[in-house]
Image (tube, rainbow, N blue to C red; front, side, top):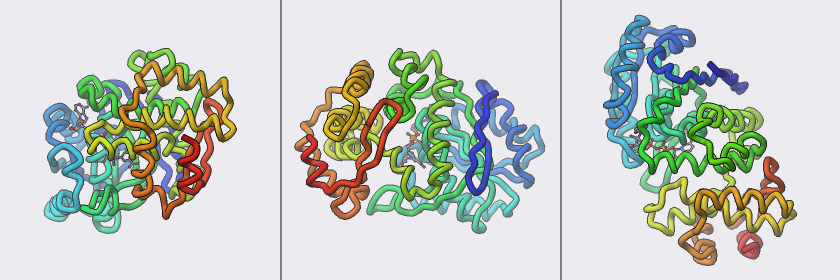
Length: 343
Ligand SMILES: NC(=O)c1ccc[n+]([C@@H]2O[C@H](COP(=O)([O-])OP(=O)(O)OC[C@H]3O[C@@H](n4cnc5c(N)ncnc54)[C@H](O)[C@@H]3O)[C@@H](O)[C@H]2O)c1
């Protein structure tokens, strides 16, 4: 069993236990006092893992409740959030009780927001079941739901009591969702370098899965610990995302997020040569990315206008993230015009 202690205001652990979902009850028992647990999950994940989790929690004496939402981003709404809140209220949950978010980033964000706000905050346990949720969304405390005006506009920072990762659940993940997570994984390889870079460069993510997830999570934890509320350093995690979001938008959200991030990374590597990036390292990084296919279907000139409308552009200025060397990236605040000149 591997563990990472996340040293934020509300310190907690990320526990990695391959095949450990069967024993999730014990892990939850170790960190919470209340007897009631609400498992929030989606209809896909429920079919696969809900019974296992329920059984394990019940075996430790928990009184177990469930809320099953429809899968996908379309569910991540204030209405679904209120359904979770209503179920908590209806079952008489108190501050000592616990929400277990069993699913991908959609469930994690939404159940996390319910836990953050019901009675001004009850216990939260994140049990991520997608690669993206394991290496990204379950870590760092950002929770929330979408509004019709945009994604994640209603939210909070709220840390869980525990993040529990069993990589075996990824065996059932559809290929498209795998690719989504992998896009973020490629980002971590550039940010973190070292062994993480070597794993993706060797195309051995599946063989080295637990180590890969652990290393990505460790990188995110390191950044979150230094900037819990995303005031500076945490912006590094947006590497590849400024153009990635524009690519997603251009495709009418047909292209998976991870694929768009991958193309965004390739473009930012090219631009990094013009802001002092190390030529040899950038070449090596580009070769690594090329192994995953980086033929962006759009010309960068078509993408730039779309960046202007992105909320991360913050009134015409862009906090762009560049690669100086593999494992050494930096944020530079540029006007939109100066950013555009790099392409
Ligand atoms: N909070 C954060 O810091 C943060 C960071 C990045 C992304 N996000 C959010 O995460 C969300 C995307 O998360 P996601 O990519 O995990 O998508 P998701 O939660 O929609 O899951 C993707 C699909 O995979 C299915 N699924 C999940 N686990 C499975 C498994 N083990 N086997 C089979 N099917 C499974 C789900 O039912 C769903 O259909 C977005 O809403 C995004 O805004 C949040």
